Image 1 (cartoon, rainbow, N blue to C red):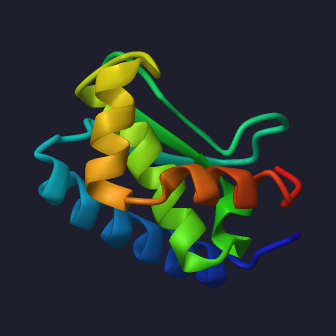
Image 2: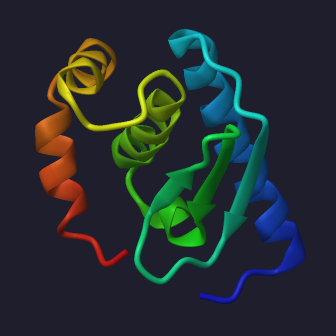
Length: 108
């Protein structure tokens, strides 16, 4: 989907607001936020704290946008998808597994 510069700026600001909302709740501080086209992922988080989101995230329902954001931000607290990460997901999103399954129905 082609976006105008104004649309891109608006979507970036909206996502950044959601990211900082969740970062505050989770008590993490991403070093940078980027939005770009990604072929195979919804998002990623580097060990240096850079959060990168796929532009396609902006087309998701809000609850799934939050799922993607929380999923990645939690990697600033725990690097893998082990028991601790899953317990954090449950604490912040409750039925996160249902959201994860729902996300699979969207093309990423």
